Length: 137
Image (cartoon, rainbow, N blue to C red; front, side, top):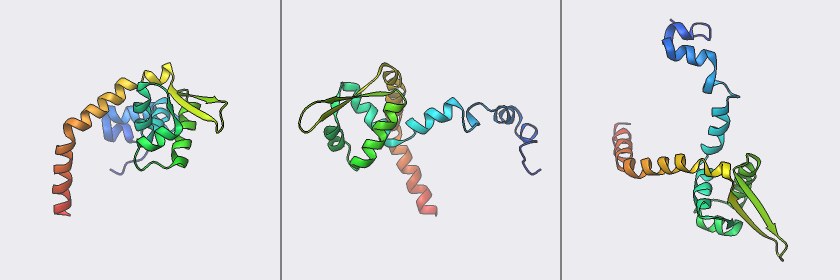
């Protein structure tokens, strides 16, 4: 039976009901909104560095290999807009800018740490799977 929006519940049962009723599968769901932010690799790396306290922009830029200043700037603006980090500018020449996690941002750290721990524990299995897949391709 071809799948259409109308017959999703019939084809996929309970999962189909969840999809059709919305939840995280809708484009404007809270889950998707947050996933858009924390699903970005730069966001996760920035937030994990900020767990130790305020860090200057240039220090963040040097600590995260492969991250351009433009992309860092955009990521920090997005995090600030979402209320996950604060930006503090000091009246120096040139201006010194520091970023820090907000209390809301700190609530995500346990989740990000769990993801990091999972990656550390399972990276060899992931690499082995990639090698097998690539060998068969």
